[in-house]
Length: 127
Image (cartoon, rainbow, N blue to C red; front, side):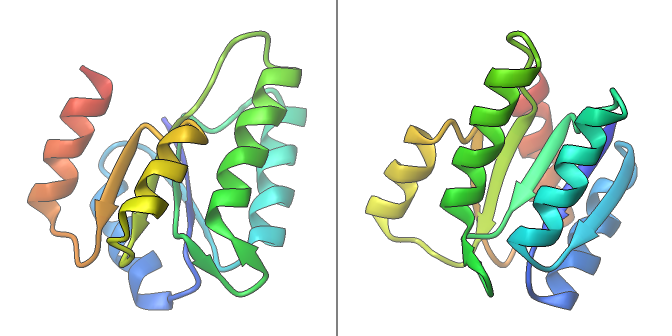
């Protein structure tokens, strides 16, 4: 499994990488611009990400915009194949949760997260 982690906080990226590395190879970036580059390269190389973890608050834009971007690009380029998308954020606002779901988020996790939470959510998302 190929995993992309997008979070501007270094410790959050490291924690998620630690938690998710048992499921597959993890790439991690701190911005939307970096995420788009890796995302597009993965598709170009015919090795798209299976799972994308996105923080809502990024230094160069909204994680919701990145979520929508990834979904639309997969829809255009991958003939009906879609990665699983998880929003991992400290934002508990109901409106944000609803927007994320509307942008095809498969799972929404509120920080701080634990290994057990990740394991539970991964079982739910891949059942």
